[in-house]
Image 1 (cartoon, rainbow, N blue to C red):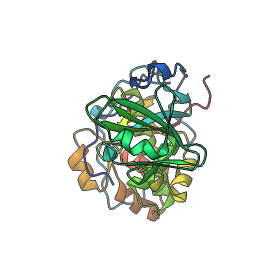
Image 2 (cartoon, rainbow, N blue to C red; image 1 turned 45 degrees about the horizontal axis):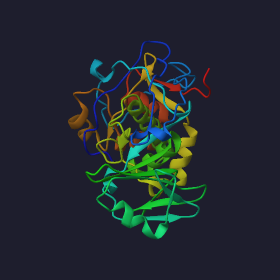
Image 3 (cartoon, rainbow, N blue to C red; image 1 turned 90 degrees about the vertical axis):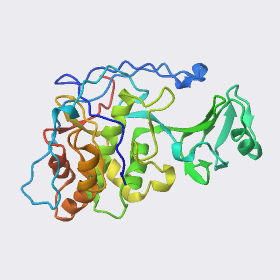
Length: 316
């Protein structure tokens, strides 16, 4: 669960619809110019409020959500993410696994050098632990995984070394990422409504870092400085169900995205985020869910003034 302060701030665009994105992306910084994805897609929100407004509840809570401040909301620059409008691609630096010590493949997964030559499975670990510069791209295949330091990851995994040490980056659709974050940030056996609240918060936080990436190579990291991410190990049936039930829902303020900060308890949230505004207590969310509050009611308690909006399902 979240113990440390994340990268700063919440964001919003002008009232109404969020600004059209104008972020031209390369798959992995300058080293992947040949794989540059030129696709630009209109995003993000269908409207600043959906039929699932954050509903105020009169139920009492043992947690006292911090009051929002104007510093929580900031202007969102124009950008365009890659991937489907409702499920854009996110790049997560596996900082907890960098530099990599070992790599293995399961199922139909395979890896290639930048020139397209296949990297033989038996030589993978030797390649990625070498000191020379390299870019190795691994695809998990339909049912496979790329196993980094004995942890399995889905979709695309990049091993990148510019000569200063290796870094691992997992590229995957937003919704699959969110399902894993929920399981890394909350126990999967917690109340489904708490898991749903966490899914919305995690999705909103991730989208802010599509607007404002942490680095030219990745959007955000996998540690609690951002939000925890454990690949396939932290995705479970309950977290996948919570993600599916809230698919495309994000927190919005006056038509823009809110960077939905959160922490394990109200005390940690206040210590880490009080100067930034609203922050959700994860244990508080669980307590509210156990008292019968729905996920939108829980979010309303913490992100006062925000509403739920849905990502567009097409480019129109």
